[in-house]
Length: 485
Image (cartoon, rainbow, N blue to C red):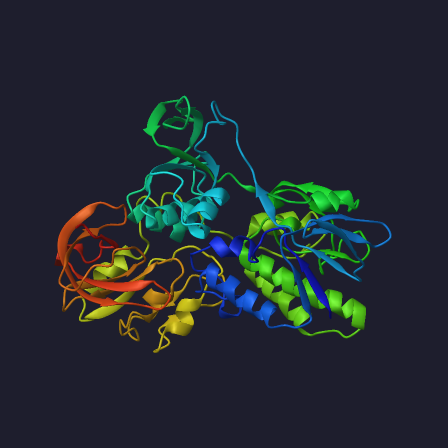
C-alpha cells in the first residue's frame, strides 16, 4: 500500500517519546522495552520504508463527503483522496475543578512528561500529584528520577488506581499516597505555592507546600474529526467518554474510516499499538482482497491483553463487542500496598533453610506481563498465562539476577544469605561506587541502615543492579537505596 502519515507536530512518536519506563505485556508486544525505544524502532521502520509519505507539521483540517481530506502542509492547504483512512488522534487530559485552579504551576501530567522527558525541563521543585492511576504513579516516579521532590499522591478513591508494582516503586521512595483525599484549593497569589487537600470521609484538611500541582485525573478520546464527519458516537465512561461505534476490525459507521488507539477508547499503549497494526492490515485487506492471517492473531493477542481489564471489556460490551468474553476475576488487594506481603512466610522459611541465594518476586497482581519467564536460564519462573501471577520454583532458582533486570515493575530482588547481601534494581543517578556506603530503605522508604555497595552491574537498558551488604535482620525488608554524598 502507498501510505501517507499526517502529524501536526514536528516529530513522530506521539506519547511514546516521553515514556521512559519499561512496558508490560509479552515479548511480542515489546515487553521490557522502554517506550522511548519502542518509538525509535517504529520511526526507524517508517523512515526506511519507501512507500510511506510523511507529512510533519501538518494538520488535517477536515474529511468531506466526496472522500477528500484537506490538510495544512507547510502553511498551504492541500487536498488528498485516500481509499482508506485510519484516525489515531489519541486523547486529551481531563481536569478537575478546585479553587485557584488557574494559577501558574497547575499542569496536566502529560504536560509535565513533555517538559521533563522531551525537553529536559523540570516544571518545579516540589510537586503534588493528583490521581493514582498508572499515569499518576509513573509520572511521580519519573519526577523523582529527575530529582523533583514529590510531596504526595492524592487519590479520591479508597484504593490505588494503578498497578500495584508502580505504587510499590513510589512507596520505596518515601512518597506518601493519600487515598480518600481530594484537592480543594491551590495556594498562592501569582503562582502555586501550596495546596489544601481534604479527606472525603472525615473532611479533615491538610496543607501541603508545593510549587507544582500535577493533574493525572484521566483521559478523554480526542474525537473532533470523528464528530466532523458524522461518525456515530456513544458515551461509554469505561472507555473515557464519547467513542466511535465500530466493529471488531475497528471500522466505524462511516465508510472507509477506521480508528485505532485512545481515540477508540482509553487503554494501555500496548493495546493502541496492536489496534494500529490490526487496522492497517484490515484496511489493506479491503483494498486488495488478500486476507492476512495476522489479523486474527492480533485479535487474540488483544483479548489476552484485556483478560484482567474488566473496565475495558465492560466498555467494549456496550459496543456489542466481546459479548461472550469473560474477564478473569481480579483479586481484592485491600491494604496490601500498605502492609502485607503474601510471600512473607515463604521468605522467612527460605531464610532459615539451606538455600543460600534466591530471588524474591513481589508481583501479586494479575497484569499482562511475562518478561521474567523468558529471562530465567533455569526455567524457574512459570506462568499459566500472560495475565497470571508468576510462580518461582526456589529449587531451580540460582539467584542470577536476570529477572531483576528485565522486570518492568521493578518487583524482583535477590537475597544472598552467605554474603548477607541483596541485589536491587536501581534507575537513579548518581550511581554509587563499589565500596561506597549508601542508605538502605524498606518498602515504605524508611531508613533501615547504612551499608556498603558490594557490586554494580550496569545494564544497557539502564535498570542497573546494585548489590548491597545488609544486616541479617534486614535482608527480607531491603528494597531500595539512597546515595547520599
